[in-house]
Length: 60
Image (cartoon, rainbow, N blue to C red):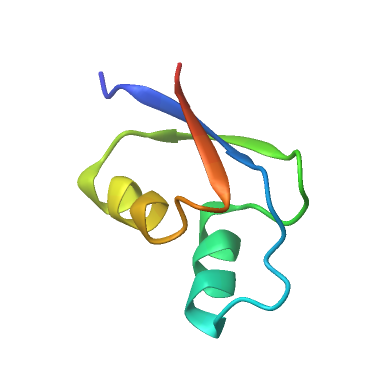
């Protein structure tokens, strides 16, 4: 069974490059404070790394 991680949006995507806005949307994040849960796959980890300054990550 894959390990789960919780991703919480902590900062706004406004005035960010388009690729960062699309990465937030692909992660399922739309509002500050929103929390989503994903499997800890290399793809998801890479997406989180692209927007690490906008989100916080917690092992679930």
